[in-house]
Amino acid sequence: RRFFGPSRDVAAPTDGPAPPRLGDPLSPTDAEALMAVVGPPELPEAWKQGFFFAGYQPYGLQQVNGGPCGVLAVIQAFVIRALHIRAPSAGALLEVDEHLRQEALMDALAEVLFRNVGDNKKAIVLLPSSSTACVLSGSQLRCLQPALFTSYDQLRHHLGQRPYRDIFFNPSGCGVPLYLFSMVWTRGIEGCRERDFDDPKSGAMIGGHGYCTQELVNLMMFGRAYSNVFDGTKRLGSAKDGWMVLQGAPRRPNIGFLSLFEAYQCIEVGSRYKGPTCPIWVVCAESHYTVLFSADAAVNPQESDKALDLFYFDQLARQSERIRLTVMPKQLPPHLSTGFEDSE
Image 1 (tube, rainbow, N blue to C red):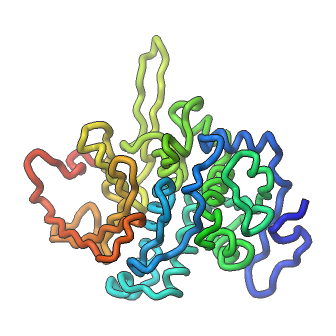
Image 2 (cartoon, helix red, strand yellow; image 1 turned 90 degrees about the vertical axis):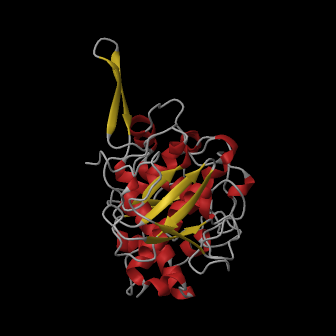
Image 3 (tube, rainbow, N blue to C red; image 1 turned 180 degrees about the horizontal axis):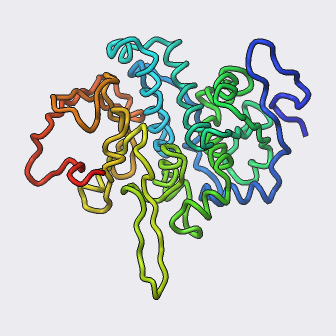
């Protein structure tokens, strides 16, 4: 079988990091186990797209159809984080040019896969047999060949080279599904099912109607497919009957998370997620994920006492107008709280 990835015998280039080490293609058993953690036996056709920018907002990724919003929103948040570092000013971030936003996109993909999911130790990209291969079902996963990266710089460099740029950045390709499969394979089947999910039997990355679960969002945000968004861990049960440990945000993340379900009193979002290190939040509103951010990287999400301008972006909404929200700290309605009253 011929594969699209680089040959095992290709020599290291003189102008960049060495190519990744290639493993054997996934066996039928591997493919079945991987798809079982992903969830459905086949991803919906709506997942078939790559990572690309549209003409609605200069910094904004495009989502073609409903379904992969969780993956795209988290990558969008990390694109903004990269632009905080790369753009010389808030204005330059909001009007970013093509070159800078492509660099930020590669930064984001590398940070999530290597530093978060791979614990800053490794990343595994699953390569298809060709750049145009459609990989959505378990049987199609058998064509994937793992490419092992052992440093962030190595992965970051090769994302801008063939075959990786053709795989991930083709608007009509399967870059988003392949990135999903690569994240699960990097974390490991056992890591997701036995160490992360609250319920190893029912936990999955994709839930009903092809939407991303909280486990997938958490995997991308801090490298663990935990099922909750409160701070730390909680125990249910008793010493007599046994304990069940529920796992939430293990630390203060770089990107925050907010949910409309907290307003409905369905879940608790902890102070770690509400006060990330960067003024950027992924927002869950019922079945859709979007992004809220400050263009000013110097804003402290926990301690700012001044009025704050935040920008809202929905990658599915064809958002031609920039949406700016002004937040007035300490002027919330009496029935609401900031979430920091009991912060660590």
